[in-house]
Length: 325
Image (spheres, rainbow, N blue to C red):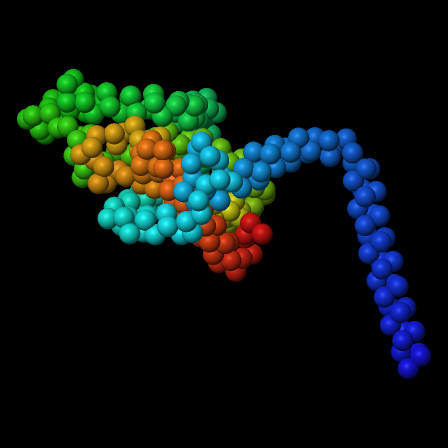
């Protein structure tokens, strides 16, 4: 019994010594990289102050928040605002629009930058390549107000570029009010998003492709592989970890169908049955009408679903050894 107790004490003392040594090592490494850590600390403080501290605001989702009385004096109502949103007659339509628009953006907008990066990787004329990159990057730096103005001008019935072209080609006789027909709205919103984001989104993929070992292409060329086969057998597998990570993030943002683009291009009340998504509904009904608790409840619901989708997508991706964590 004594020998057993002595053995247990020895093991405990050894574990404590190991933990102490490990802690001391971490502290020593921290101060040994103090100049680098000082560069990280401002970023950590920024995230803590602007992302974590405001999280107490989610409590408004369970209150009848009064802006004059504050959170401490406001009445607690439990899940009242969640029930109100779920029983709203517009709930199914809003969720349908959110998922469909976001799904179309993923279906069309996610592979588009990859295809552009693969195409640009095969261009050997550097002047042409840089020109295409510049032209496709520029729309990203335009605000949605400007982009919406472009789209409205192009699609206008009065001297709009598209209507003028269709009339010159004898395809239509009378101008079409594209921004007043619900059937065209999803195509317009996906097209403008694709035009605005494709170039900038391809930067990461172009950088990843540039890191692929050129000897792999040389070996494949000696084996008789065409450029098309090299693309599928070398380039895409080499950048697959990047593709998977970005796809996981896209799945996590499934309920973020957009805000500025939908608010500006879908301002016509006729389009509201196909343009109203969670974010625009929160702004129009919650924020504009001062229903802060209701808006917070919807935002919390969206955040919880997004985290769940992100976790599920990451767990599935782990089977291919490519995941965020």
